[in-house]
Amino acid sequence: MKLKGLSKIEWREKFGFECYGVKIAIRADDSNLRSSFVKSLPRAGNVCDYDSEKNVVSLITKASAELNGLYYNDEVAMEFEQIKDTLWEYIGEKVLFILAINSLPSKFYIHAGAVGWNDFGVLLPGFSRAGKTTLTRDFIKAGADYFSDDCVILDNKGYLYPFPRPLAVRTDSDERLIREAAYYGAKTAEDKMKLRLILFTEFEENSQWSPEPLTRGQAVMELMNNFYTTSAIGLMPGEIIKSLNEITAQVEIYKGKRSDTKSVIEWVFGKFKNEKRYH
Image 1 (tube, rainbow, N blue to C red):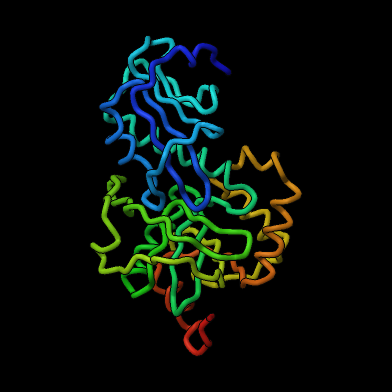
Image 2: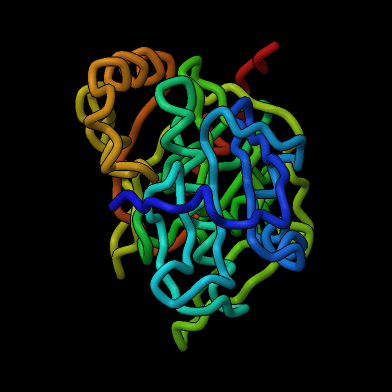
C-alpha cells in the first residue's frame, strides 16, 4: 500500500547506509532514533552520506497511530502505533530485506550458515530449526573462519562475503543463546572467499551422515528456496537462474541428514586436507 503525505513530515534525522555496493537513504521524524537505528543495521555495512535519489527508508514515530511505521519508497513496510525497544530487531530485518532486493542479481542473500576452511568457502543453507547455527558453531569451534550463521551474501561470481552477526544457538529448552563468534574462539573472516562446497543438511535423530551429490538443477532450486527474498525472485528469474547455474558449476554440492555435527565436520575437513588453496 502506498501512502501519500510523507512529503509533509518534518524529517529531523537523515543519513545513509551502504552494504556491499547497495546504498539506502534513511530518514526519521525523531532525531533521537539514529543511535538505535544504526545498532539495528547489519555490521557488514557502513553509515554514509544521505542520498535521496532512490531506496529511501522512512521511519515515522511521532505522527499518529495511523501514520507511524517504516516505509520504503513511500510503500508501507511495517506498521506500529508507537516505537518500542523490541521493534528494533524487526526494523533491522526489514532493512535487510530491502538491501537483499536491491542486491539482485549481482548478490544473493541466503538463509544459511557459512564458514571458511583452508581458503575454501562452505555454504550451509537451511531453514529455521534445521540446525544450521549449531553446525556453524561447531565448525568455527573446530577452527574454521566465521562468515555468518543465518544470512549469507553470495555474489554471482561464486564468492562468499562476511556478514557477521552474533550466533543464536537454540538450547534444549528452546531458548536462543546469543554469543559472538569470538566467544567460541573463532576468527571472523574479513574478506570475500571463493565458494567451494554447498551442503544441504538438517538434523534428524539417529541418522547417519551419508551425503548424496546434487545436480546443478537440483542445487539451483534448493538455493532459491533458501533465498532471503523468495518473493522477489519473480523480478528477474532468468538472470537469477543463469547466475546460480554458473555458481553451481564451480562447486561441489551435497545433501544429507545428520544426527551429529562431528561426522559432517570431519568429512569436510578431510575433503580439503590435501588440496591446494585458491589464489
